[in-house]
Amino acid sequence: MQLIYKPKKRLLTRMFVTSLSIIALVGFGFAWLVTVLHAQNRYAQITAEYIAELPVIAAEFRENNLIPITQAEDNDNIETSYIMATCNDHFTSLWRSQLAKDLQLTDICEKYLDIKDDYQAYYLDFDGLPSYLVFKLSTVIDGKAFHLLILKDAANIIAELKKFNRLTYFRLAIVLGAAIFLLISAAYWGMLPLKQLKQELLKLKQGKQQSLSDDYPVELQEITQALNQLIIQSQQRQSRYQDAMNDLAHSLKTRLAASIALIDDSSLTQQDKDQQIQQQIQDMDHLVKYQLKRAMMGRQGLLKEHTDIKPILDQLIQMLSKLYQSKNINFILHCPNDLAFPVSKGDLMELCGNLIENAAKFCISTIEITAQQQTNGLLKLQVDDDGPGVDETYRQKVTQRGGRADTQYAGQGIGLAVCVELVSSYGGSFEIKTSHLQGAAFIIELPYTS
Image (tube, rainbow, N blue to C red; front, top):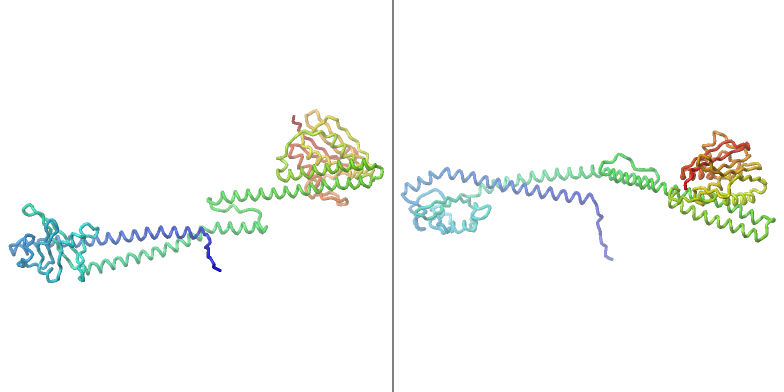
């Protein structure tokens, strides 16, 4: 089996390699330019020295009463201490000094012709011999152009330039080493916020943290803020799902209990039982769809419609009468037949069911339900009972999820909290007072919308 190694993609590696490549390219380019400029400068210095010696060279020629550039190759009468050669306009050799002949330097002009257009046109190389620096002086005699080439052993200058080059590249190596150190430091320092982000995300995953902190660099703040918004939305969605499932379980519990009571009710015919149980099943199906829709969209996303309240109240009274038949509750209903609340059917069933069931659970024998449109335009739903009531110190607690004022009765403390959430979503108000029946009065007011 062949193992294939696939390296991981790392942002830090990309940044490091790219930055180091740019620094190396610029550094080596700059070093090369420095060495070239230094070589040209040294050549210019030596050229200036030779130019300063031109009077000495001219004096040597004057003593011999000869002009070397016009002499034939075999003329050896010119004595000079310089390595020299003369060329015509086409760089054909005319004359060499005796010293050039002694050093076996041939074809000086022709070799210069090969390099004269190079950027380093001041080195002449001879096979098996040292390199020479060459300096060109041009003149015109009798209308013809001639060139005087003066050569100088380049061993010392080459050694000097090599030493300078080594020093330059050594300094470059130091600079690159410092650059690598600074790059690593900068990369580590620059990646610290990402490392912090990774650690905080891990804590979020483990449940040790609820949101990302705010002390990130400006470049990452938009990302962390967006992540925090996603986290909040996720938490809200999860909370909404959990609340919806709890509400669904709470609503279905009452319908299941009512169905069991209907099955055990011997006073009903089988046809009546089937009809009422079918009604309960339809209500449960409606509640399931309603709660699932609320879990997906939230309360604010549900369609607001007008729903007749009287049929819902009649159905709830019938159901709860069977469920709490041992109490023989006297339900008193005040509600016009044509009164409609600006609430979806699912919300209105949930709202009325929780209020009336809560009253049935705590009442002694009487529950009074009033639904009406008031003169101020508000729609009012009030449920009174003759039970123990709710003490003022507990009225806020019982409207919170899990909050219960009396643990004597079974329950999860969800119903009234659901009512408060529903009323708030429709822009209404929820209030708990003392009833004229000496028990609790739950009052809901909703704005009427056409």
